[in-house]
Amino acid sequence: WIGMRNEELQDLFKGYKVRNAKNAYGPGGHRGLALLRFDSSAMGFLEAERLHKHFINERRGRAEWESHRARMFSMGKRVLYGYLASKEDMDFFNRHSK
Image 1 (cartoon, rainbow, N blue to C red):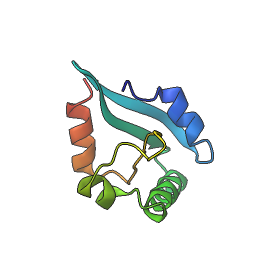
Image 2 (tube, rainbow, N blue to C red):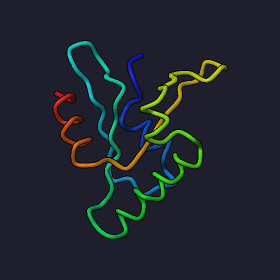
Image 3 (cartoon, one colour):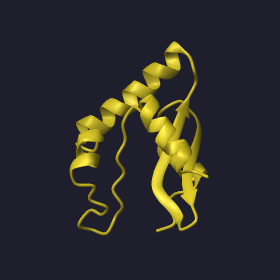
């Protein structure tokens, strides 16, 4: 799987005020990680938190990502997980996106 292009991610989440998207690629291709960035303001944080809550309500938040990481629904459609990144998450993403 080659992952979603940045534009595809932004389009998929157009109901949120996403500033930009970035995918993690390594020597073997897409690493299965992407980052959505929001404005560094109170409003940006609230938008990020709103998206975070959406994933929790869909049962596709951090806990689900860490517990089973199912990659496909039964109909062959990819599963996207999402959560509000911590500093450690950002460090990991930056190390693995070069």
